[in-house]
Amino acid sequence: MVNRKTFTFLGCSLTFFIFGTMYCIGNIMPYIVSYIRLKDNSITIPSMTIIFYICMLTFAMSFPLSNLLQKRFRAKKCIYIGSALYITVVYIAAALQDRISVIIIYGVILGLAIGIAYPPALMIAISCYPERKGLIVGITEGIFSSGTFFFNFIATAIVNPKNKKPVEYTVNGKTEMFFEREIAENVPKMFLILASIYLVVFIIGILLIEDIDINTPQNNIPNNEDKTRNNDCQDSHNLDCMDHKDDGNISKAHTHFHSEIRSEVHSIHLEIQSDLNSDSRSDSHSDSHSDEEHDHINNNENGNRQKAQNKKTEYKRILTLIVNPTLNLTIFQVLKTVQFHQIFWGYLLSAMTGLVASASFKSIGIKLSYDDTFLTIVGSVGSIMNGAFRPLWGIFFDKTSFKIVYMVILFTQIVLCFTFPNVNNYKAAFLIWIVILMICSGGHSTILAPVSVRIYNREAESKVFSIFMLSVGISCLIVYFIQVNATEYLDPNIFFYIVGGLSCCSFISTIFFTEILKAPSN
Image 1 (cartoon, helix red, strand yellow):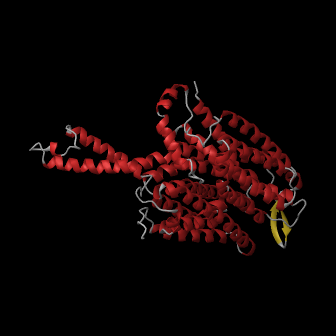
Image 2 (spheres, one colour):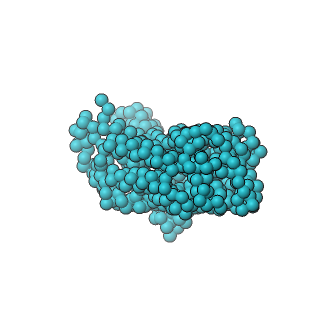
Image 3 (cartoon, one colour):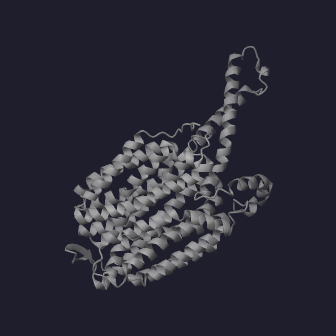
């Protein structure tokens, strides 16, 4: 029989699936712009790509608000709030007819809705299977990125079922591509149908989610067969929860599922040193049987060595998550570290490439005269591959280092950016290049939280992660202004050379990156 943990995780997954449709903005934006153009003929598609970037920015910046709500309400109520706001926005979007209202409603408020519900949903999902935290995070990240795959096709089928191509219009002396009136007028119907589907899925998901309070010592959702074991462990479990109750930051869930590992590091490290010293002494005096001089060594030498070996293996595994376990830095000391600036400014520059691939692939394809169905396939395949590769990026990170993974991402982006203008006239190449850029964007998102945990101590890691997320939000606005200017005054292909050059800057900086922090000088 399926237990409550499975139902709860399934419910959280359904909410992630719908929230991930924020990436549909890149696919439906030409439809929205064509609809608004019926009332405002000065609008252009490049100018409205700001909606996606603003949505990403408000999503990143609303995590602290979500944390405040989690302190006042139960986790499930926070998901209620975010889901209700999300549905409301999509329904209201059906009535919007001017660019400002679309930017505010579908950009700012949509990102806010997702940012409110995402952290508590993630925390509940993790609490279902605390012994498989990494796998759960990878799965939920993948589901979040996969919702676009299905709803891109649904949106296109509603608005443009006959796969008609956009036609040319002149705007401010320049040629722009827009869909005709008969297609554009289907946009309100699209929003109403999508909102109704979202509503049904949200209701099912929320009904499946176990109603837990994240501010109480309850960290796991008990099964009937686990109640006895949970009662036995209640005292130690409560202490662990109290340790995390006042973290007050955007990665509260992330801090929770790494806290036990952090507490183990010091004790395991000390035990390993003690056991290794004991073993070396035992080897040098094995002939004289002088083991009794060291009262901390077991009589069974083979068992002792096996124990030490097991601890070394466990310690090595833990160090893939925490590199500086004994270095406690305040947030102000963190801001002074070279590693912080290498990641923050590196992400600010390199995240632009994946963002423009997600937000503008369709407007770029329209200018290249690709049909609507093909561009929908490009966006959908890119979305599903983005989600499918996120767990793999996480595994790659765990087995290597941030430096290696990030340099692989950057090198791939650089090669694609400098070659895309030469191959984008070929359908197959256009699809492959855009999809790989979206995969790289997923890699950016996946490794950012783990590197915050691996490098910094528990007191600072979540605050650092929130600042790192802010760099992505700022990158959204910068890439928008660069893109608008590049497409208005320069050949559109120049934009890819620009973002490729910015990724080169991040690549050079990352060459000198190390995860080992120096102790702050007093």
